[in-house]
Structures are given as C-alpha cells and as structure tokens.
Image 1: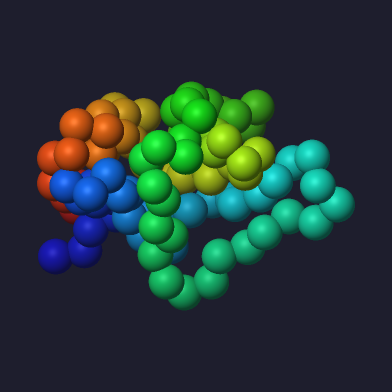
Image 2: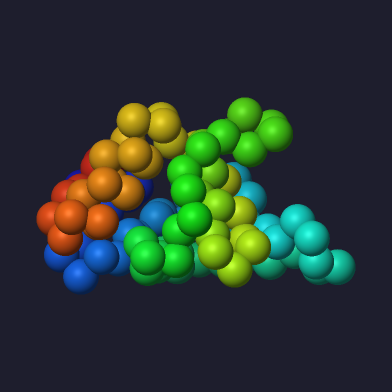
Length: 93
C-alpha cells in the first residue's frame, strides 16, 4: 500500500515525495528541492497549516520554509493533529 502522509507517535510527519508540489523558502535567494525520499517533518516545527497564494495545502514551517502538497486539506489536518497528539496514522494514496 502506498502511503502519502503518515504521522508517528514521536510527533513526526512523513510526506511522500510524489505529493510534494513545492518545497521552498520564499524569502531566500534560492529555494530548496526534495528528490527521491520522503520528507520527514517534526510537528513542533510547523507554524501552521493553510493554503498558500497558489491555493495549495501548505505546511508553513517555523524556519521560513513552505511545504506545498497535492493532498486534501482535511487529510493534512488529520495527520497534523494526530502527530501533535502522538498518534500513529497513515493516509493511503
């Protein structure tokens, strides 16, 4: 089974690389790009979850990065809340 989002009991969120639209730091000279492996995010480093100016579901990180994803807002919100609560959850493709 392919998993696009996953939360762990340790407060981590795994985001499958294929659902990531953009990974960038808008106020820097260069953006960042993820290749190949899942992105692992500590839930405590997420400032908030919302839509970016392009309308994509985005994790806005405390360090200034934005991780835009091709997922439903409700799925991202469920994984975010599960990670905050320390609950393991998997959302399949």
